[in-house]
Image (cartoon, rainbow, N blue to C red; front, side, top):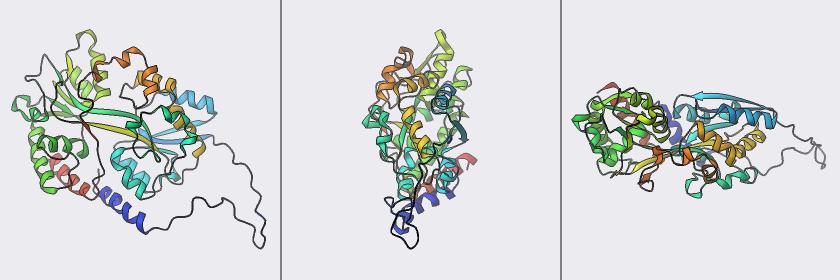
Amino acid sequence: MKRILSGVLAGAMLLALCACGGDSSAPAETTAAGTDAPAETTPAEASTELNIYMWQQYISDELIANFEEENNCTVNLSYMSDNADAITKLTAGGGQEYDLIMTCDAYMESLIAGGYVEKLDLTQIPNSSNINEAYWTAKDYCVPYLMNYIYIVYNTETCPIDITCYNDLIDPALKGQISTIDGARNLFPIALIALGYDPNSTEESEIAEAYEWLVKFNENVVAYGAAEQNLTNGTASVALTYDGNTSWAMSEMGENNTLVVADPFDDAVQLGFDLYVIPTGAQHTDLAYKFLNYICDPEAMAKNLEEYPYSCPNDAAVAAAPESYRNDPARNFSYKENVFFQEDVGEALTIYNDYYQKLKVGQ
């Protein structure tokens, strides 16, 4: 993420305290000048376009096509390359371009404080009752889409050691063996946990120690990203990745699968959420609400999970999903309660980003 992002989000709290917003309960139409009679209003026309900004290859074409057909509309999808893109859109008046933007749980506090997202009327999203209460983040402002465990998977035939904790990842025996996800707020928490610290620490001394741990980790990394390909083609024997990517890799290997999720595992793993929000000033909120309700429909989401087999916060959709999803070995591990969540670290994000840039350039 660009360094400027931290300034934007840190400033969100200040904006919340200083800015004078309009009264959301004020009438949409003002009275005619010089009279006490209300101006005539006309019913709003139903929107025919829905503009969404999200991750690429993360929702099925069939789901989108069915929604378009049922609502006589066109869905325009635009894609981000990382979470910083979504934050930049939201803080720069995203409602002028988009009706729904995907973000993650780590930034919700600042986005709400800055007034960058609309408060939701959940009565317009009745299917949201299917989402497990334990998986809501800022319930009045976002709808969880999918969630993912970030854990370790390895090849039992080619990995030279058994892995039971994060410190195993800096074992010299794994030099050139690890494929890993990227991002400061994904990598630093595992180092902090390995060192015995809070994964959302705001102490620079602890973040600096985590940086030194990650320097050792980097020596064992052969590739960033594309964990499923790196595992299946033998480039890597270990991956720090998402459960959905592990599912694809195991499926690709088929009957010859020798991949296992590291279990037992002594350390907490990250459980992250991808969330849809309506940006402030969105132009087509009627369709946005319909879409949010549609993705919470059990049958629609169950079909989506066949193509994108990530963990799902929608209990009814999981129950409706095929047995192959519910019994997926990528989600068969014993420590699902031993998790942590990304929290908004405020101004400390600058510290993370500074050390992350040093890590990436090999300083």
